[in-house]
Image (tube, rainbow, N blue to C red; front, side, top):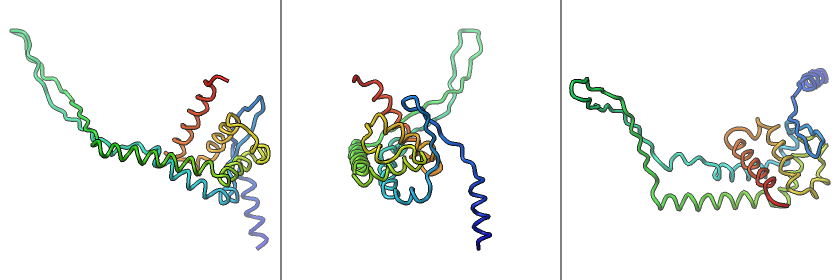
Length: 192
């Protein structure tokens, strides 16, 4: 059994993960994939936020139908000239009903509310900070993070998400990172 542990330990120590590096206040901070222990500790907040994000960032492809019809038109030429036959595509888009649109807006508001509740829950805030701490391998400790402002937390959270693409990947992860980018840009543009 001890040979197996040594073999697994050797394999795990040989796996080199390239860190995601950000600059914050002139300092470089490296972020790595979170370890299983941290992910399990934060699973409830990750599940709550992912569920809210799925509803919030749904592309709503079912909200409309798009039809493309190919046909030909004949251009009538001047007398003595040949007629042209031109291929043409016509696109029509049929929107959802107003009742369905109102229901969609209601669900999005509920998803946003649930996501905010999940994120602002005191236990969940601590879990998110633990994810940041683990991803930064302790450089960003939870005690310090608990007193940090959003202009510090948001880039750290985005870096954590980016370093953990395999965990927070796919459409939900991309949408969450895009929203964090929007928040960062809005924060930079806001007057102090």
